Amino acid sequence: MDADDPLAAYHERRRPPMDIWRKHRPLHGGGSHVQPDTARALIAWNGFAYELVGTAPDLAAAQQWVTEAPGTETADE
Image 1 (cartoon, rainbow, N blue to C red):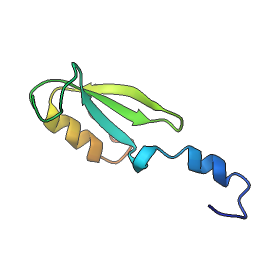
Image 2 (image 1 turned 30 degrees about the vertical axis):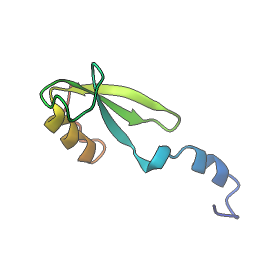
Image 3 (image 1 turned 135 degrees about the vertical axis):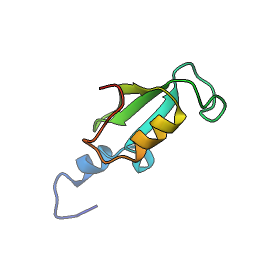
Image 4 (image 1 turned 180 degrees about the vertical axis):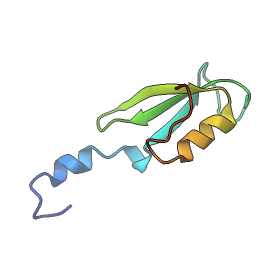
């Protein structure tokens, strides 16, 4: 933490767990690798919690969304 920044603790708390800003989960549960052709829920960190931001038709599309730069989303527009 930066000792000169009075909001350093606040900024630290707003970071996502393990610095993962985007995730995907199978819509109906289970391991993400078990059924690669099923739909995925796309979730993103909003500064306080993860929130649903869309869906992807399959594992490949979800993985692509996770690695895209923020602001260039193509899934479920």
